[in-house]
Amino acid sequence: MRKKLAIFPLVLALASLACGAGSGDISKESTLEAISAQVRETGTASADQEAQATQAVDAGPDSLTATAAAFAPILAELPKYGVDPSEGRLGWVHPPVTLEVAGYRQYKYVNYFLGTLAQDFVISADITWNTVGSTSGCGFVLRSDGNEAALDQYVALVTRVASGHFLFATMSNGEVVTGRDIYARYRDKSFQWENDTTNRLTIVGRGNRFWVYTNDTLIGEIDPSAPPPQPILPPEPEIPANQADAQAMAIYQQQKLEHEEVITQIKADYAAQQRSFNSAETVFEKGFMALVALSESGRSTMCKFDNAWLFLIDSPSP
Image (cartoon, rainbow, N blue to C red):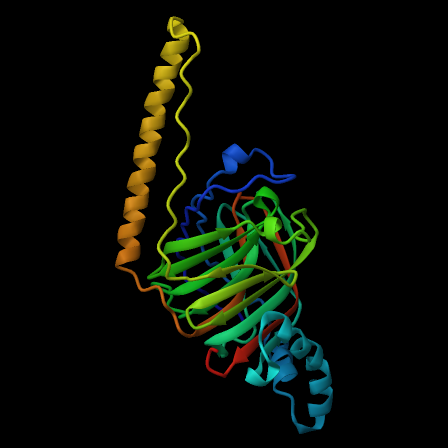
């Protein structure tokens, strides 16, 4: 069954990224700018696939024993993330799926269980990627309201940029109003940034807090309503050692003028982002969940999701 979803911009400017092995030209990647995306036609599951996936969670009485045995490994994972299996119930176990998206800053997501809404939750998946353009990424859409005209939702991605980063965006009324950048490789030494490698991404959401794990390592805690981070300004150009050199001084003056223009633009953009943030709703208590792939460079992005599941936490936050 195919569904046509909304087209919306996803723009997020984040602070400079840390250096790392295989990161390429870090100076050119110092700011993750304009992670724009369009939700294209998705829902790649056929009616038969959707029925089979639903049956895996909503098993009948004759298969309860087998279902419990199948779900036991998932429940055994929960204590790693500070969650007791008795706190809730399994929301879904998603069949393996591969999302491929091509084009400049295109965005595609899928979920075979669109009827399941999540409030407090644990969502997890093994993600294998092959991307062209290191800021392309794979991850989750969290607590989306499904409003095609003006989406309220959170977007969580792992990317290959600078040896591996995690990006979190808060979208309000279809616009990204704040976000967070975490250098995953710095905190999780097992994180693999190379193509055709696999990392496990797990997010625990309780109320207005999110805990992010890669490969079972806690890499950060996120407040999705925190204001946009202060931009990191580029350093001023250096004054030539020989100030009597007219040509060198002319180049310096031109560089200084360009630097001032860049600083002015960065400050104006940040002020505009602050104004948007101040008038935006940033706390979304409940919504739809999905698996997501983002193409940044205009060439193909492949995100393969295995062992993906959602656990719904019913107990109040501790």
